[in-house]
Image (cartoon, rainbow, N blue to C red; front, side, top):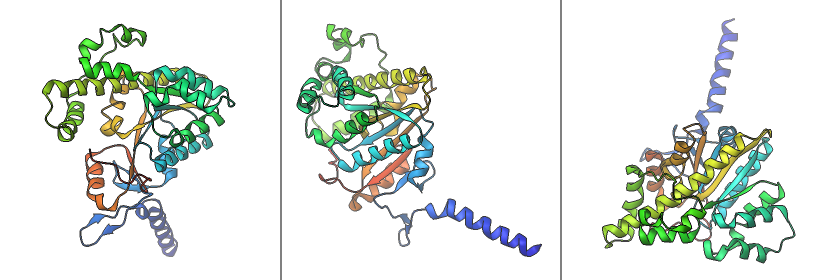
Length: 324
């Protein structure tokens, strides 16, 4: 009996090691700091490296999954496709929301999904790609092709650029009185001035664009708040639509934006939580291309709780993102 108990204890310890201890990241013995590597997915709350299957299990029942990218980074597009494919394989049918398209592009996105033979150049013209985002559409095209192939709904997240510019030029209070705002039902939308969010937006602005007037910084902050509140409105509405659908497996909303719209849950996720009375189950995943020379920055992101998960990817073709 004693031998049997010993065998069972050894087996239990081996299982515990396989399920948790082997996911402890390697540490630099000299500095006692984690050794970061491209491909790691960090559970920020526990400080452990998890597998993609662990991540997939964590997001399976979510209402919203936020993926924060570095713009035009092919490695991050690959990560997003992996998430979408994983959700599909697990029986979910996500709605894909994209920052790269303004609300006025929604009819074009609907047609793109419904008409596979629609010429690419006509779609880009109808969607206002050059005016609203620009750069190589081929960078983001794999996401749209995947959505069309699997008949996933596509949602434009960004308020029209003209409205954002109006806020940046006139300030929020004045811009909201413009008739153009009424077309998009934004005049009566609540705009919550969150001090923590304001610090996150204004501090880098002052650092990277020094010498401007306080009024200029305020208008730039107003424009950021307007964009994030507008995106939160779209995401919250999509969550409500999905919750009202009888379709099995419908959802989650997969929001694909720059990291600046999800960091610390302040820009969009916190506003979606407010708009859904805290009922939406949300998971944030920050994608970061790993540059070994910036390991301290990764450590800071983990310590400060930048997201629920931090996914380190290889560097993209444009290298590490600029600090300003």
